[in-house]
Image (cartoon, rainbow over all chains, first blue to last red; front, side):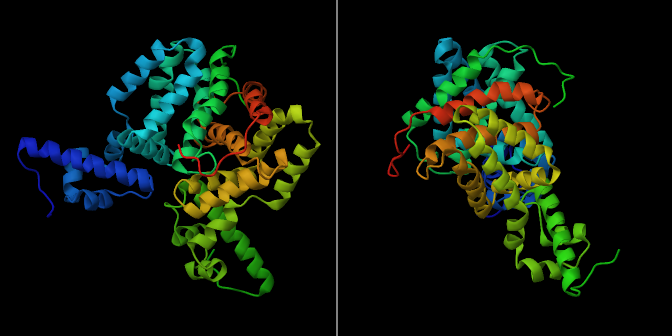
Length: 203
Length: 203
């Protein structure tokens, strides 16, 4: 294959999708610091100028492949809304396991986690995904941000160890056993009585 | 200041310490992918050749500043050994909070967390620190690796959100409130009845 230049309208959608897939794989593998417009262009087999043309900048290129599909987030929201409150811990674990079993979602989450380490805009996007869009659907209370943060702290740590760093024995533990071990902790945060957090509080 | 070349014996210890401090700051800020021998040399104000001379390679340079001081690990171990088992959840939280309040330890942990994302050897070192050296001291049973992994999943996720990503409201929550919220979850893992994990198990 030779690098493409911008073509007719329908071909351009295909090229953008190819750049997106390459960017997702590169960010997932190397994070923000280790990924360049040039390396994505090489993997996508396009001219770097075409990436600037479509995405404007590296930061523009970073946003799309680290934002999970809206369809998936809506599905997750529906599943949680349908679950009894005392089953939400198990439901959250099931969502985590199912999401990482889906290749495209897994690559997106992996890319979001790895880029969040160094890129402030990725960190804010990560927060929006985890706390706002996903966990906002659990409690349904806009002010329950502390509860969402506590739930996210356990889910993020587990996702890192099991799926990104692949540390044993967590990485190879059966889905039944990891759910049985962790779901009660998530349920504890769901049931925890919390006073509203004070924004002026300091550590 | 002008870059130094290798000097007499005592001056060399000072230079190595200066390179180490620069490497810790660079890895903590930019991770493994974003740090080069050249960038560390610039911050330390030494010739890059001197870094090769002392540390051999980038991977050699990565090891020292991402390994917590043995003195600190020993102190942590003593504190845990002295705590009653039903207080270990609180003791673990106190260790986390104290460690991140110490500038040098905090930079080391931050560097270790950020480099672990991309560097397999840093990941193995991270595992050794968290599971082997630190949490090994909690349970005292070499085969309790699953329990250590579960405890680590909560601590790592919390450390990332509170100290590295600085996501609110977790980042600014008082030490009393974060301890009250999370310690029971750590205690749950400490008290959890676990069957030995089967190494041939698959997810």
